Length: 102
Image (cartoon, rainbow, N blue to C red; front, side):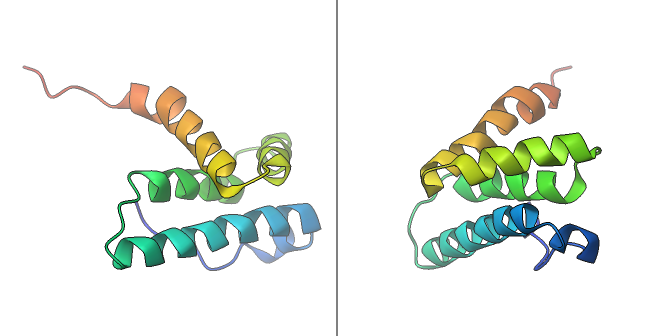
């Protein structure tokens, strides 16, 4: 999965809650990327945090954005935020993958 864009659009930066949530995703992404580059196993954590970051960036409604930002900002630690990304992956993305069975 492609890295998160380095910043969010200007209209989203005007909302401090959105900017804080996206910055948090960028920080975790950066930490995980450094860990991976150092040879540490990070599993799918980088994918999970990017899912959450991209949701902020591309969610189709303002209400949806408010919900994901609220989820992110309520997380007590990085692992909790990564868990949100895993939930979205497990329940919304993975079920959409097709089997290559004949």
